[in-house]
Picture (cartoon, rainbow, N blue to C red):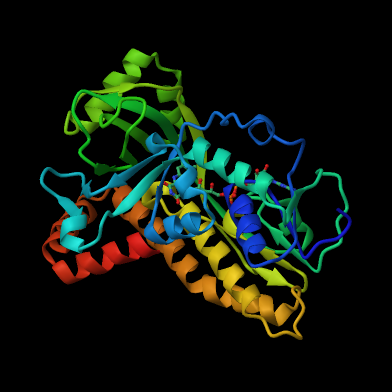
Length: 377
Ligand SMILES: Cc1cc2nc3c(=O)[nH]c(=O)nc-3n(C[C@H](O)[C@H](O)[C@H](O)COP(=O)(O)OP(=O)(O)OC[C@H]3O[C@@H](n4cnc5c(N)ncnc54)[C@H](O)[C@@H]3O)c2cc1C
């Protein structure tokens, strides 16, 4: 392909979703990876990503519209009906339930590797999308940069990226449990750790979790170096047996954590989308949700453009940036604020944050508002 309407650079989840979404509004899309095409794009095998993502209702709606959600195998998604967030003193907790919030489910947990595989398959079958080689030169009025946090195109456009590492890593793994998860997600804020158990139906149907355990770098090194038995013991000690007895059911993998925001999201002929524009701590499970909301917003803006406006028109692209900036900045600040609040060692702050949790738990309107933000994005 020598020319197209939109060149999507970056074939992660957001790049794939954007290519499909733009193809659905009739645009001709070229999708360009960073290097040689990955095995998952060639032979349909999932990549080895042990993560499972919490997706909100808006993300699921988008994936349904792209016909990706319905083609996921049944064990690839699990509905969350309850969520319990615990502080670092006994009894301080915030609880949400889909029943109280009057929604079908609070969120869905989706297998990262299978989601990526289905997105890649949908891209392969789309007549409007061509996957081009990393070295190809493609002429397009608009380039959508979906290259993730280490994007080189972002740098080439001279965009500042305010990157602040947390000195923490998130350890992810799959677990099995001796008790059913009953659709309940659990999270513990135990200064400075944040540990989340996301209910999942594989490998043990109804009795598995996806783990995301954020810990300081030195502790991450220890946890990764431990034998499985020692890791299981540390994990069960950290959760106090509240979810049942947990056991590793996969390899452990770790991601360095940071917050980051681009100081500009668009210019003449280019836009940033997904982690290329913003990175948040995974404690609220919102990074991909924000990226998919970017995809929806950019699609809407391009679809509604005046007939005389080109796809790379700077003013048009600024509409997209304006639509996404406030919500994204708010999410970066909220997750950052929560992390610092719960990592603060001072006894007074500890007392206040735990009381705060209990108070919010008793204040239904605020709880409903928080829940709506998390479920709709
Ligand atoms: C442990 C953990 C748990 C998480 N849990 C959740 C969750 O529960 N819910 C949620 O919503 N989010 C979650 N996230 C966040 C989520 O993983 C990311 O926000 C999301 O995957 C970002 O997708 P992306 O496509 O923007 O970027 P990436 O996944 O980084 O993809 C970028 C792609 O671009 C390619 N690329 C790089 N440079 C170039 C180049 N120059 N040219 C072409 N291609 C290039 C890369 O190879 C890659 O394929 C979690 C993150 C972590 C670390």
